[in-house]
Amino acid sequence: MENKILDLIKDKRASGDLFYAENIIKNKDSLFFSGVIFLIGAISVAVLNYLYHLFMGRMLGPSDYGILGSLFALIYIATYATTAFNLSVSKFSAEFNKDNYIFANLIKKALLYVSVAGLFLLLLYFIFVPYIALFLNINSYSGLVIVGIIAYLSLIFAVLTGALNGMQSFIWQNSSGFFSALTKFVFAVVLVYIGFSVGGALIAVFMGTILGIIISCYPLASIFKKRNAKTRKADKISKNNFNRYKAIKYFFFVFIASITPILFITLDQVLVKHYFSSSDAGFYVAAGTIAKIIWFGSGFLVGPLFPKVVSLKSKGKDSSKLLFKALVYTGALVVIGSIAYFIIPTFIVSMLYGPQYLVIVPLIGLFAIAMGLFSITQILIIYNLAVERKSFLWILLAGLIAEVAGIYLFHNTLSDVIKIVFAVNFFVIISLLLYNKKEVFGA
Image (tube, rainbow, N blue to C red; front, side):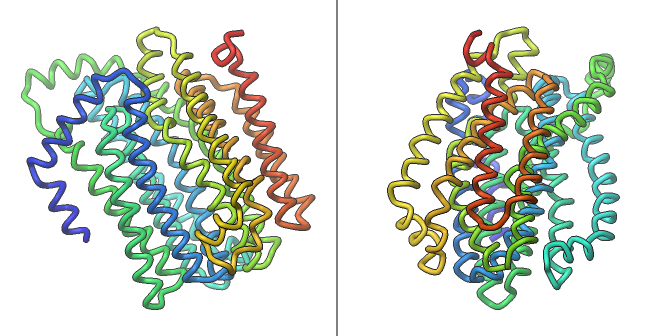
């Protein structure tokens, strides 16, 4: 499969058509037009990711699926921690992608720093693997080792997709995600079927990430081609326009702002695996996976919103209308999707996970609303990151502390945990709407 995909992207005519399409998209100012590209990509990736989880849930059973779910929570934390690299590179790519020298060096140095720092963090993570396994009640270390390697590769993948996002190369960006998800799904089914169990499911993620990196490199290759002396001289002059200190400072700000909210929807899985049995953890992961359909299905505007707000800000233009439109589109999808979870919950659970998971029917309605609120929250977070506001981080940190404390104190049932997740997301979205009341309400 990987060879066929690589042959496809090497085809000059096919890649030429993609570059031509990208140029059309860059010349469009409509958030919705770019959002459609992300919607197609997001739906494709979401469908494949959900097929992955649905097949794994059915093939592994609640107990092993609970183990996979807790490991996936760590993958999600690591993956979304890379959002800091993705958004930082995206921001400065959006500002400097027409300046070859700055842009090329930005990507090169970002890849170098990420590779070295990531390797150090990976080795540090390996030291703590036995303690993490003990906390999650997992007997084998192999799954945790694979998770660490996937996290390291995700750092590199994030830099590359961040560059594509900043260039507004949305087709290439989404293509890399699609083929990565497709590879993950296909190989997971095969490897688990032949007996590799949880390890096979994780190896498939590793293979998908590798392919995503390869595809992301292709449209960036032209940036690193040798330039003549005249071009290099002109580019050196523009080097002074890039503030390295500002970039590093912005990265740490984005890191905190991106890792904190994702902990809202991952730490609960980790804590459930610690406090409950593997079977209960499997049921919780299944309920969460179904609820996250609302998040994935309504969050397609997050990708194009960031570079467009950055671009408007760099030109001194107002971006509040983009925020309002994104909130309206996302909110409408959340409401429509959430209603279905209360009308036909039994049908949804039976269709997706089968009769052995019917115990989660009472859980998915409130869980879906919580994920819908999180989807809207992400719009507000991305907007504030793009306009470089920082004080909203205190709201996120307060919400995270409240969730961890709430689950620690009240975890008698899975329903208790979901109520806490909902309450925290409700608090955060109300607080952020008030924080951005001028842009949202015009007040």
